[in-house]
Amino acid sequence: AQSVTQLDSQVPVFEEAPVELRCNYSSSVSVYLFWYVQYPNQGLQLLLKYLSGSTLVESINGFEAEFNKSQTSFHLRKPSVHISDTAEYFCAVAFSGGYNKLIFGAGTRLAVHP
Amino acid sequence: DTGVSQDPRHKITKRGQNVTFRCDPISEHNRLYWYRQTLGQGPEFLTYFQNEAQLEKSRLLSDRFSAERPKGSFSTLEIQRTEQGDSAMYLCASSSSGRGAADTQYFGPGTRLTVL
Figure 1 (tube, one colour):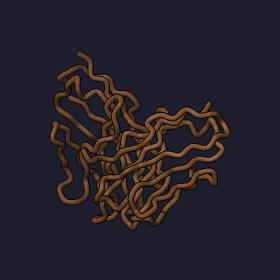
Figure 2 (tube, one colour):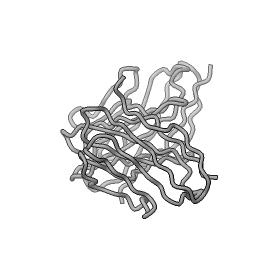
Figure 3 (cartoon, one colour):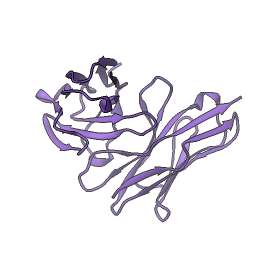
Figure 4 (cartoon, helix red, strand yellow):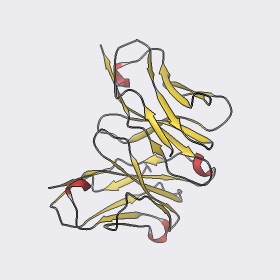
């Protein structure tokens, strides 16, 4: 069965420290990978996505994620976090072969402390 | 702003009542999705429409659930004879067809259902 695992349910970090949110998936077919962010009392917003090509993808607010096919991972990183990055982060995959649904991980709550 | 909108934002109902939620997708998007999110979990796929055709339904969607998308525009999700286990956030998303599974899905703010 296809699944997504986010290894950390909560990640506390101090402001300006680096952070990595981990995501692993299982699939026997090609995948497309997404990170969504959900700020308090707001809807899900796309942060970045990997479709093909370069395995390193970046967002406009300093996050990046690297697709590692051999390790079936798509970890999200930021070298220096801000208070405003406090949110819930969801990793999601869509599987090639005609399926359109997203399979989400359980989410990682990033709490940035001053 | 022409994002995905959902109505109502909150719904409190008594067990056994029927409820209906509405989703208005981004106007040029022909694909529409419903997901359910419970506390502490990621969204779970419920169903998918391309235009007015419902092409996929999750096994999570019991016989008490029905979704429609008349004329390929807005969509409704109805839950009959609600149960306490139906309490969740119901999310709607839309996308435009192009790269199939690679389409970016844009999410609405959700409808939070509480069944007493």
